[in-house]
Length: 85
Image 1: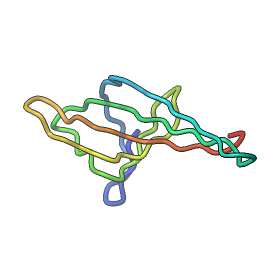
Image 2: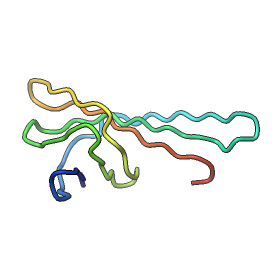
Image 3: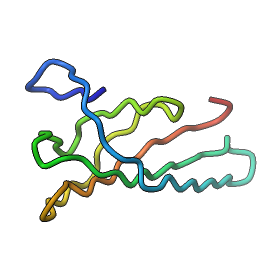
Image 4: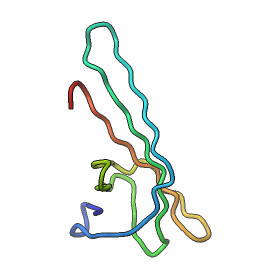
């Protein structure tokens, strides 16, 4: 599911190429996690920066970068969590 500001939510199909995670904790501050998803979508799908992507089994990600290629969009999306979420 993709949610944009201009269009109603819609379902698009793409390929999850990779999901990387990183975490850190400073002193007694709550731990923070960052997830970075690399995805591919058809050029027909209108994926833009700041769209939200609901990836089944992985949660909601925010699109941070979209690069059009010859056959697909290379999309980078981020997810942040803090504490015991």
